[in-house]
Length: 185
Image 1 (cartoon, rainbow, N blue to C red):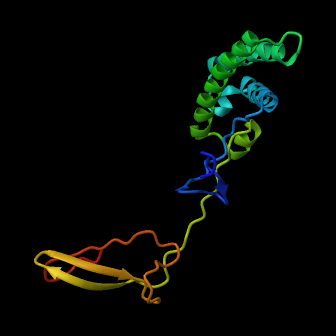
Image 2 (image 1 turned 90 degrees about the vertical axis):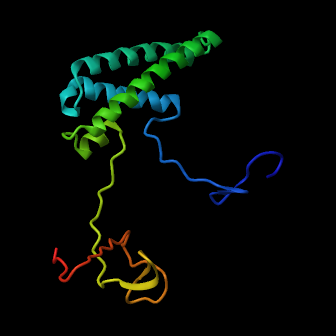
Image 3 (image 1 turned 90 degrees about the horizontal axis):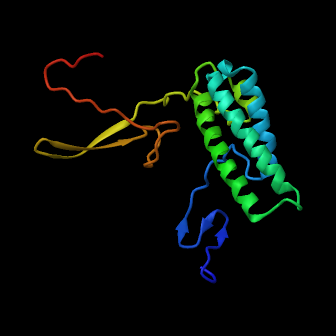
């Protein structure tokens, strides 16, 4: 720690590791935000049901965009920019971004929304999950210790002597059976 501040070094802060947050879909620069919300507004106003929204949702968002636009245009001009105008703009921006996030959650959750629709709206497109194959070999199970009715086992990759899990393996299900013949399924 130098001068009371954290110094980032290759993604690790001194004395504390941190995790990178996923990129937010809402632009941070107000000029970019203005373009983004106009695109989002025009597309959901044209056909709200395509994205799982209602006409009332689109109309309410459009009213917030118009209010934001008016407040933003006042603060862009040096002659009309004042502290009170910036406060009004920030309040309008907060209300608009809050509604934007609410509508984006609805659009993302709507089953009829395609990835192309998400991309056109400027929303995050989820990556396609690739199915992972099952391990090629059955694991090796060693009984380490038996203490009355408590059995400690060690599960390892049968092809590798180290303690590393096989590729794509996340968990193992261990079943036990007491009786003469074990069930087949």
